[in-house]
Amino acid sequence: MSSEQQHPATTMADVAHAVGVSSGTVSRALRGLPGVSDALRRRILRAAENLDYVVSPAASGLVTGRTGSVAVLVPFIARWFHAQALAAVHEVLRGAGFEIVLYHVEGTAERREFFETLPVRRRADGLVVIALSLTEREARRLDGLGMPVVGAGTRLPGGLPEAGIDDAEGAAKAVHHLANLGHERIGMIRTTDDEGVHQGVSRRRLAGFRSAMGERGLEVAAGAVVSAPWGADGGARAMGELLSLREPPTAVFAEADDVAVGALRTLRRSGVDVPAGMSVVGFDDSPVAELLDLTTVGQSVREQGLVAGRLLLDAVQRGRHGGSRVRLETRLVTRGTTSRPGGGSRAG
Image 1: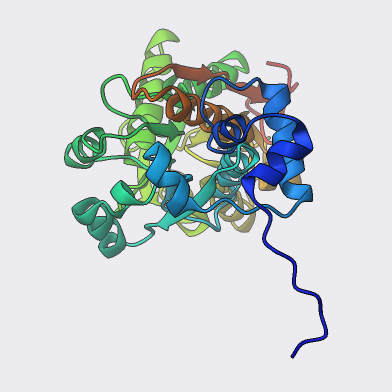
Image 2: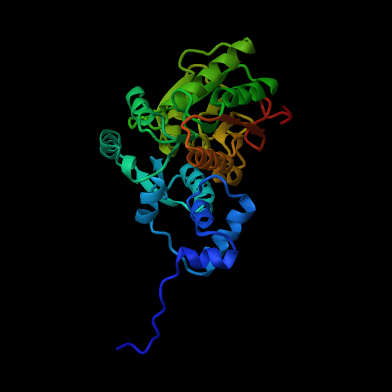
């Protein structure tokens, strides 16, 4: 027989007694239901943590019809964008007492299986989709889940809530910056995407590029828009194609910082000075952009995750499937990879 004294498990009544409220109030607070103030909810969560009280999802689900969990669908977990957004979503939802069920669908097979079976249906009270371009069929499948669905950097159908940016507007900021510096021959590197993860983003950024070029009265020359696989290797190959043109551009907008990294590598190896011989603008303001002194169009990934988490929390608590579409601002971050043609002043 163990010499350690066995203590009975903490009950909801113990938490209620510690806070001075009813067990029903504790139950509503821990399940994220309305009718409990934010201050009181925080007190109850602290008391439950201090007493090592563990909610039984099965038991609470019988009463509330909820699982006490929320799901997150993400195509990548190692890429910086998805990792930052996931951390922010986790911060909001775990802070509200929900467990997180992660669905990682990096490959085509995993993605197909998820949308065929929709395992989230019986395991969560809501779903956050992080940076995944959806097909029409996938969008319809999510719309028919019968639970709140929120996008973080993802365009969703109908009135489903989302937090994201205006990709076209962001791309236009890059073009206007280069045009203000005096560049007329401006190229673009966009990405191909066999998995369909970024295709929506790519289309919108290309549209913004073309629209801004038209606004400035600039021609998009033949061969000046090059498509390549996502990442540094794709960017390197695409910049090689641009340099091989009879009249190469004097500036290039890369669809993403990860692509711009490869473009800079090719320029360095080709002996082309940046920015005197070629100006380069990326998109995202990822950690590598600051490291490489890359001019870029910045977006707040963390804020998108936080807002998406709050939108889902609100939808689950209120039991509604619609909600707001929140557009966060992009910003031009001017660094050392852009200047006037020939390497003049970097103002612009």
